[in-house]
Image 1 (cartoon, rainbow, N blue to C red):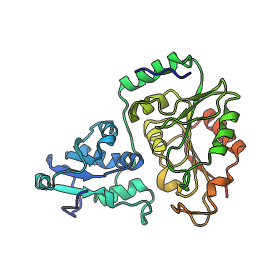
Image 2 (cartoon, rainbow, N blue to C red):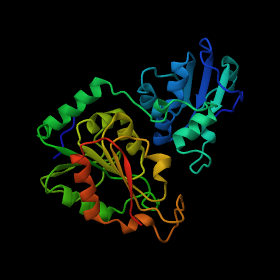
Image 3 (spheres, rainbow, N blue to C red):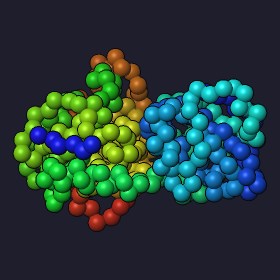
Length: 314
């Protein structure tokens, strides 16, 4: 048994000049997890260039914003009093970047462009988070209490959003993948809500055990690789440097995942991708081959390089 311890508006539309003498900027991005993480380069660019950044988002995402690399912004909880608009020299509403966008290589680039940041250095193309040591320590204690501290670990996402979402990996296929991986590794099945899964001695149900999102990050630092679909935890793992095997179909690899290092992307997308049709009768992720996923996981674990690449599967 698992043992556990304890929307605003755009005020200005001007191109950014470097070193603006600590001018105050308000950035709005209400949700969701992956999108909040992909906004991190916007904050880093402004902070590196002398701006005083405030970031408005829902309270549940504050731990993520507090972990933005190097200079986290000051936090404002969404929704806020409209009177605060007058306190800022510049304001950018990143909520206006939608699921499907055009004209940019990636969604990170779309956020940067929405903030009027033109031709940024490559270092601003990848989101980065810093993990407080307390979260890593918590994860190590959790693993020790479950006699897992000395084993090579693989993490697998048990997706908690609707099974009808085209980004969801079918549960039956996930179960097969767990079984294959457990022949050589201990598999940690993680997710924000408790789920029932078929376990054996090497498959461990860690769903619902993490008290907050950064505790999940701490747990991911202890794993050799994360297997995931297009989820917020894919962005969490990529931004902290955990190697990835990302299974994509309805979303484009270059848009949401290719900018992370150590990322093997299995692209099951068809001619109709990108697509977010919840009623799609030919879900592209239904054709996943569990053995193919297993092989990709082993290859990523043993990869002597950190390049990311896409393997087209349709």
